[in-house]
Image (cartoon, helix red, strand yellow):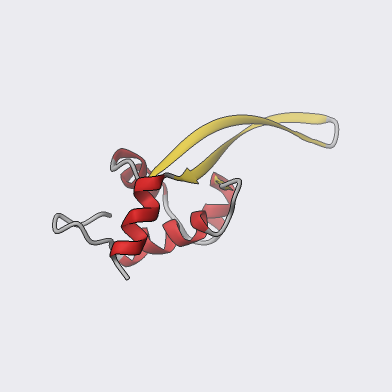
Length: 83
């Protein structure tokens, strides 16, 4: 979770680095596969460091809703400041 002193925890930094490396963002499922928890995503979104949007995607003959998470400019700045 973001720290009170403005720094990032290791988990938050890792999540932001994954998001920063993906121009179209990452699905929630992919982030979960990398060990990023819902709690971390909620903290990043509440802090304004990431956003989540719902999308419909086709998987074979089925359509499903997925959440896509993207880093914000504030998230990019936080990554730069914490290095």
